[in-house]
Length: 297
Length: 240
Ligand SMILES: Nc1ncnc2c1ncn2[C@@H]1O[C@H](COP(=O)(O)OP(=O)(O)OP(=O)(O)O)[C@@H](O)[C@H]1O
Ligand SMILES: [Mg+2]
Image (cartoon, rainbow over all chains, first blue to last red):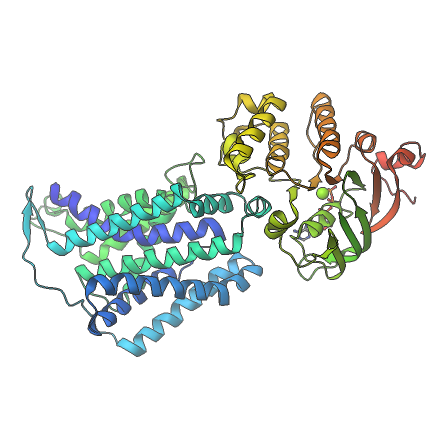
């Protein structure tokens, strides 16, 4: 049971970083940027390259995150601002196209192999009966600090107030003297940072290959929609639900149900869980877990 | 003061909604814009505010060319306040938060002083200061929206149908308040209105738009006595 909770939380936090980024940006620009999952992959590759170039991990991680943030901003100014003038459907298709292009670039640069961060080998420890590794704990810490930092920005800073005001009513925010374009770009930067951190924490516990982005797309979207698209912190709750479902599907012994000793669903069935939840929610609670108008970003 | 000359404007690659509009509004003056639905009143206000970029013509504010200055800079630079016709509050924020959004660059003392003054003036808001704006009635939102604009202490106020949805008593209060602001604070007020009679009673001059052009401009007092007013009242074409 402890193991189940632990696996769920670890998985949830990977999703959460990227889902929060997706939802936060959505609240301002009203289209879900599919390319965000590729920003995660970019962050993971970039972090790895920086580490190979000789930087200590503690420098490589934030530097890669900041660079991906800048890249996200660049794409926003060069591409999405213009596409959005034609409407959010066009911008969505544009983000799909950008996603595919980035994928192709990764294939050219890295090939189909899986890459790993250069981390010291750490034996697993036992914690209240659950197996945990040092890497799991350190990525957990990175994620919690990042999410906490984002929440602090959102609720306790001037930028955060401006982000929430712009998300609620962009016209009125501008009429209150807020430079909404700058606020949007700052948010896009933050979303790039969060997505990159999410990609790097994933890669630190496993590996990164070019299809990581595609694998993350469905669960991240499901988490963001469950949390109520545009409700950034709701996405964390969405991520918890999705990953609980995924962990349940892959960690449960379905053997007894079928008169066998052991029967585990293949790991690839995890996606089925998020997909099923996504469909159920779209059918019955399209506004997400929280229907009242909570603090949207 | 605002001077718009030969403004042409529209949305996207659509047709010109405003065709060659010229108008002025000075400090210590209330100018009302009247006209039938869809004739471009809100578009004119949005163009002056800076949400819509004119395709031609010039907009000067206090003598400076301002047609390309975006709204948030006009707010800081010229003290422009804008109250949109719809979606005029931050729905997810409380009444207090809405008002504070209008006063982001003020000192704490000024802010508190204005806040309390507005609370005294509009008891409806004071009673609901902790409510989310989405939980207010349409008329209450209208008041909140006006109060938010006043929090900033604007020198130029652009109001898009400030009396829409208000009860007669409340409408009277709001118009009276607008008249008082003009005199007390030397404000330049440009106001779109459907309640022509009430609006003309407090305003100095008026422009009547029709199909994106200025059909008629006159002193409000003269317009009030004009037989054409009857047709205006019905939202008809004053040239008909
Ligand atoms: N955002 C927009 N995009 C495209 N067209 C618009 C937009 N806003 C208004 N229009 C068009 O511009 C014309 C004038 O609209 P506007 O809102 O200025 O009218 P109005 O005089 O304020 O009307 P009302 O009295 O109903 O408020 C209308 O034909 C409308 O369809
Ligand atoms: Mg209008």
